[in-house]
Image (cartoon, rainbow, N blue to C red; front, side, top):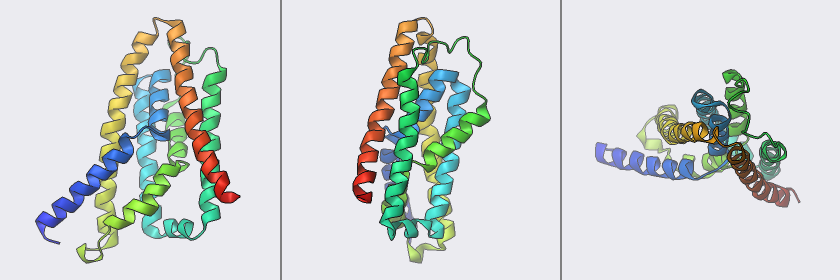
Amino acid sequence: MDIATTFTHLALFTAVVFGVIALPGMDMAFVLASALANGRAAGFAAIAGIVAGGIVHVAAGTLGIGLLLRHSPLAFDALLVAGSLYVAWMGIGLLRSRAALAHVADAPSRPLRSTFARALATCLLNPKAYVFTLAVFPQFIVPRAGTVLAQATVLCGIIATTQMLVYGLVAQCAATLRARLQASASGQVAFGRIVGATLVAAAGLTLHAGLRGLG
């Protein structure tokens, strides 16, 4: 491809990636919850875990694991179920806890490595990421434009950069909101439950899709 075509190709991919990442989902909710509960550093640790998960998704798609899932609907549906149960577990935890976010000023922060690991797991169990890898990502690999590895590396860089920008803004806003919520115990609990309810609702939709496929 010539320079103009390549630029247009990458610009279109960037626009699609931004739309997918900016749409609220499991990853964004985890960044939001982490920053609200444990501050800006935890939010950034969550972003690092999600970016790492995105790299794994791209590598899996590039190496053909995505192709296996495409030809094994049961495996994909099982993945949807696993992801939804994990997210529902996090959401129910927020809904059941009266403390929710009310103790954030006094409680010790969760270790950043733990937040990173949970964010990585959230991303790897995120069905939206697999749908993107299966349905969208392959369309932007052009055989005549060079090696698949080189193209995947560039596209992966765009994904990671967009994740850091979008989720970074979410973490910053959540950390600012956290400081304000610390002055209102009832507001902290209410907001924590809103986040929990959002997670449970998203998990319910995903679980329905997964069980319907398995059935």
